[in-house]
Length: 86
Image 1 (cartoon, helix red, strand yellow):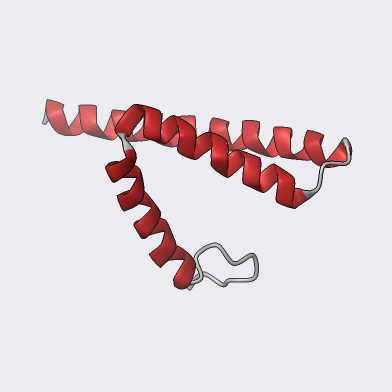
Image 2 (cartoon, helix red, strand yellow):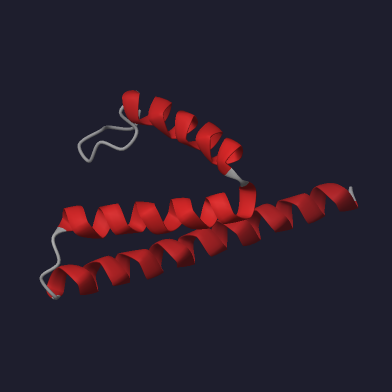
């Protein structure tokens, strides 16, 4: 029972951290746009920074696996701005 509660707490903490991280990214994105930086440049640098850090932490093979998962999600339309969730 305690392990389940601990796992649930850990999951809630991770969800909160992800929400705060998203808010930080959104704020930085908005600042970049207001400074006249094109969205393509912001996106490419964000991806490059993220991939560099992930490779540093987990190695190229793990990042390649992650990228394959992201590719599948992209193909399924998960990142489309106009997608509808049913």
